[in-house]
Image 1 (spheres, rainbow, N blue to C red):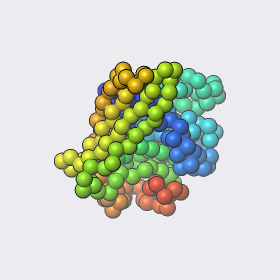
Image 2 (cartoon, rainbow, N blue to C red):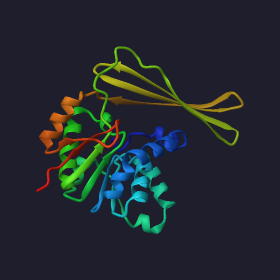
Image 3 (spheres, rainbow, N blue to C red):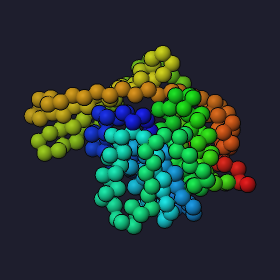
Image 4 (cartoon, one colour):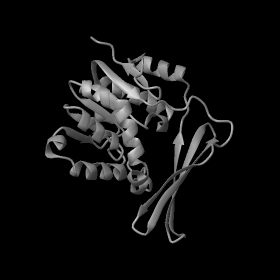
Length: 242
């Protein structure tokens, strides 16, 4: 989830380099909860729709996909175009940030995958409140939390790919380094052919660390209470039943 101009570079490369690993992770983390949803599911920061597709496939309820970044939303709609008509009939795409979407008690499950860490503290607090409003009483939120603190030094670079498309090799190098209270995450994408770099594109994102205690306090202030998460990489919160 981001502003309307965000992810303009990454949208081109995201699915090619990350879709398969993201899909496996989404199936492990969210499929069981989606299967138990009985009202609707809210997908906060749907991105290119990898998690959205898992939620649609493993549930029988409507899914609300919130994605304000136009580049990612274009990829999301392309993915939806290849789904069956019955699945497309259950999806609503919301092109504005969740905190301005005005969604009220629409879902008994909310999922925020790879989103919360990218929100500055004020937006994160507003997002908790918007999620609480969008959940029905007793509704469940699942999310992967931000890192609890900044590292003392730059983290080792991560390589995505390589993936071959015809004669071309696509890859990315991801570096994360602390910078003025945030973790600057830099993606450098490369397209190579016969060992020659045809293109190199770069996009930078910011990650805001927050310890679990602060997240718990923010959730509580928004009317959401921590519960046991179904996966070690997730946190979970529930809106109290009426």
